[in-house]
Length: 167
Image 1 (cartoon, rainbow, N blue to C red):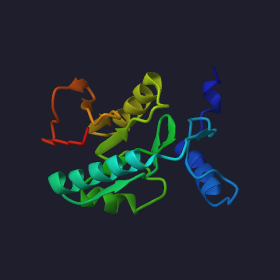
Image 2: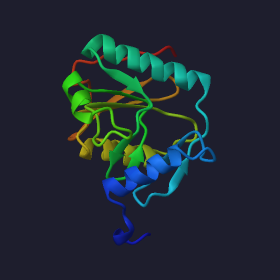
Image 3: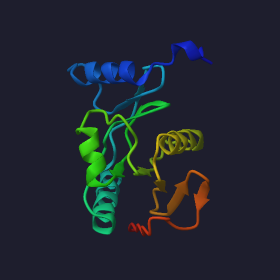
Image 4: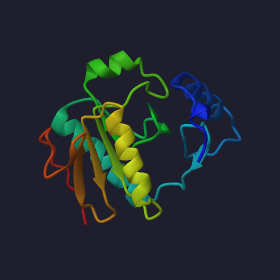
């Protein structure tokens, strides 16, 4: 386990992120852990991207604008990239559309890939919720939807969201 003194603050993580994003030799799909180390992600499959787009569309249609896919956000576990996010227009304005966002949006959606581990998803859910997400939604490869809030798993969305995906 790494020393807590090596954990980067939000400013240092953001600086590292921007340097990597501007480096043509950097990988296309990555996140950073809390130490600023690159976590490589394989390219999403077509099904994964269609599900992320469907989630974004459903967030917009049920909660109103603005929703987006693959937005980088600063968390206590580094810079993570949820598959879809939503927050009210005032919070988008507050963010000044910074890359990465300096805070976690109200709703974060994770579409599971075959390579995701239970531990990885638990870590991301916790990071998003501790960062201010009101709800984290996890969708498995079969389209099954689970809703989570700061207190734990929910039977249904407290925001009255009903997301559905083809099986």
